[in-house]
Image (cartoon, rainbow, N blue to C red):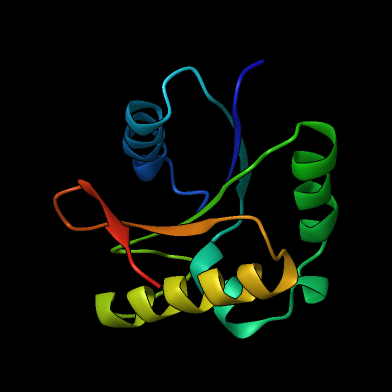
Length: 125
């Protein structure tokens, strides 16, 4: 059976390919449920999961139906949906990691950052 991962990320098309390639290098053959919102990291940092329309339902489908066993939160530089500086993005990603970890204990949650060179880096909580 293949591994499933859930990715919460910005809708910005510039980061889709680099993030998916990064994840597939680390999880060969995985299926990746991708949930997008403009400025996803900012949404997670400033709202409860229940306040983001449909997000809990999508996460529950990924976990309960697909069997996702890890979650990644990705943010990026030059984000139109969350127009803050890079240091604030990193803080938002960390807050998102904490929020998801509290809501879904036992599911590993990791952060990803796509900087100005469009390279993906891990973000520690």
